[in-house]
Length: 95
Image 1 (spheres, rainbow, N blue to C red):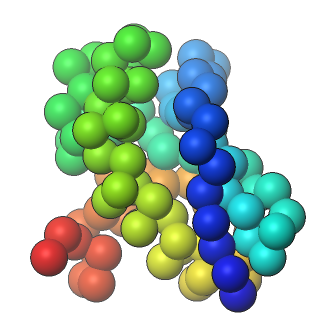
Image 2 (cartoon, rainbow, N blue to C red; image 1 turned 180 degrees about the vertical axis):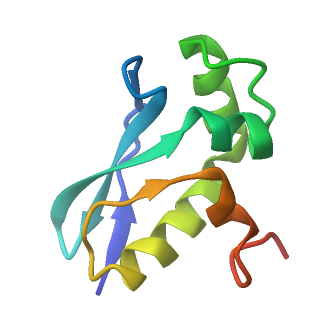
């Protein structure tokens, strides 16, 4: 499975307090999400406000993509939601 990420900015979802972003799995777009809680817990978002989440996403973009790629691989390329606990799972914590 070949996983890439688009360079476009994530989109804010105020109903779910999450950001959505696009991964390309074998060339097909797959919308993935990261929760506000994960961005607050692991990437320094000060609140669930859009500006705070977007800034935290930019700070953690590389790690978010890395964890997302692992999650996509584990879920056969299906859309995933990255929640706070996933960043503490063995094998997904930073080196």
